Image (cartoon, rainbow, N blue to C red; front, side, top):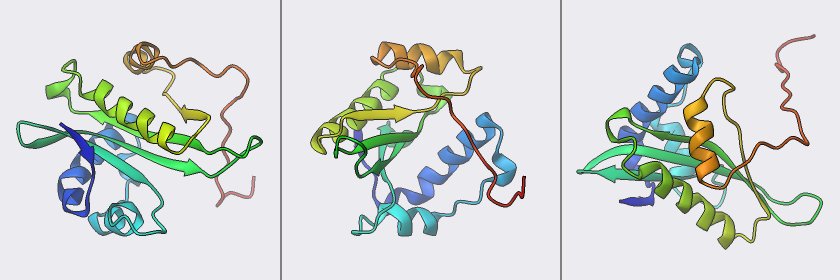
Length: 153
């Protein structure tokens, strides 16, 4: 079952987020807490920084998706950014990922968004296959760039 995450989900959501951090190699820098999740999005206040959905299988949270919205760009329509989509190994290939992705697409449609964007680690071939099956494609028009704000370089 896919549903919008609530503040009550924070204690069960955080371990899934840590699992993703381990998989993606930034667990040593992961600092999110339950109260951060609640304050920044799960409380659903007007200043929420993100929206999340969870996949509940056999009464346990087994996956999640987190998005944030860029209110407008050149066409004055929002862009929805899929920040994270994760499904626990135990339930992969059971449709949870597709259902989470569908919830994100429905949310984007409800906002009249023009684009849904996300990033995939270059070596994550499984994710690439998944997103292609969901209708995604590589954006060849843009490169992903980054700068460490704390660095003077």
